[in-house]
Each structure stands twice: as C-alpha cells, then as structure tokens.
Length: 158
Image 1 (cartoon, rainbow, N blue to C red):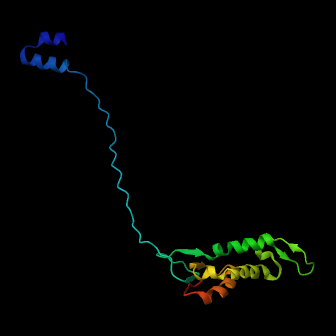
Image 2 (cartoon, rainbow, N blue to C red; image 1 turned 135 degrees about the horizontal axis):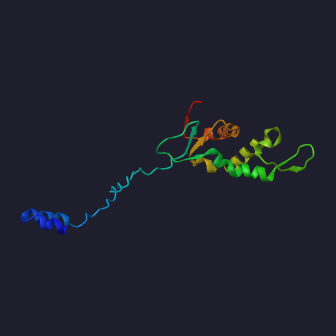
Image 3 (cartoon, rainbow, N blue to C red; image 1 turned 135 degrees about the vertical axis):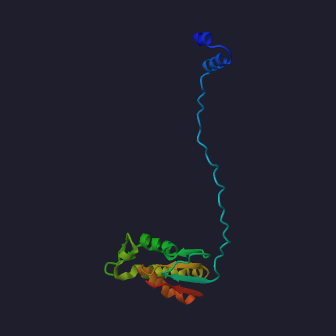
C-alpha cells in the first residue's frame, strides 16, 4: 500500500489509499423471520340442554345439539351386579359366579339385568337421550321396556 502511494499522485492516490485502507467487510448473519402465531379461533357453541322425557336413538347418533348416554353405560351397574352375584343353578341349587352376564345358562343373564333395570325404572323415565346399538343382544330386551316410556324414538337403518 505504501508503494502505491509513491507511484500515484493526487486524487487517484487518495482513492487507492481509501480502497486499500478500507476496513474488512462485516458479515451480518441473517436470522430467519418468524411469522407471529395466528390468534386462536374460538368457536362458540350454543349450550346443549338435556331433552325432557326419554328420547331413544336406535342405531343412529345425533350429530349436534343433543347430549346422550349409551345404553350400555346405563346398564353397566346391573350387569356388574349379575356378574358379581352370579346365579343359582337350577339342578344343584348351588350359587355360581360368572365372568360375563351372557354366560348364565338359558339366557337368564339378560333377563336378570333387565329385571334389575325394572327395579329402577323411574330412573330411566327422565334419562334424557339414550343411544341404543341394536347389535348388542341385551339392547333388544331393554328396548322392550324403554320403548313404551319414550317420548321420542328415532330409528336408523342397518
């Protein structure tokens, strides 16, 4: 850089010294630009009221506006009672426990569950909406009791 100054005079020398003496370029790291997160979308749903009386939805599901309970959920305390208490064998008179209500001979397990359900039948009169899957064998027996009490019955097709 000093030799260049001697050779060149005037403005040209000044420009050369400025170029030669210029500081090293600064490398600026670019950080990725992150877009701000969108505001969460709040969906306001209308409050859902439990229907008055007993509504049965057989082989169909209400999509909107109805709070329902599955029939097996309502029958589960009675099913558990049959499974824990068991049954009395007709020939020996001995009490037998079962792992599933369907294992009681002569289909008496379902009859026992429905019998216990009938003892609490007032509970079902104002149960709201009940979802029934007719593929379950106990559902057909339960419908024999529930259908006459229902204010609304909606049946789907299989």
